[in-house]
Length: 107
Image (cartoon, rainbow, N blue to C red; front, top):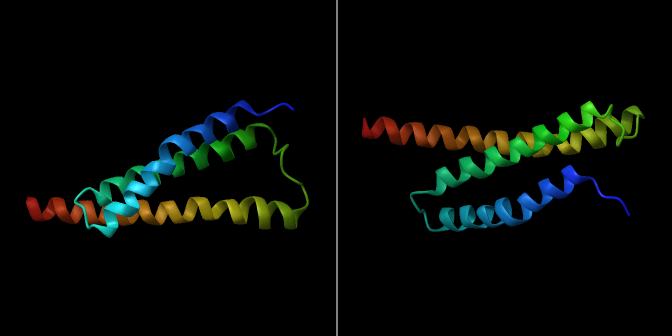
């Protein structure tokens, strides 16, 4: 079988970097570790970067890997994959708020 080089590379980074970093972020929040929001920012930004690359490469390929039926395209492809943009986006904004508040307190 032929594999998509981009997908293999992206999922390798996900498995070896973002997966363990997500677990460390979880532990940092459980322990209220000072780096928890920095880790949240890194993991969220990494996820968003992967999402942008995923959608951009698919758009450049003419949406060739997506069923053109409107319900499938908008419901499944855009809607369900959009969750992977909205959740990290919200977590990124949350991390920025906390880090900015900490910086204000130090200033």
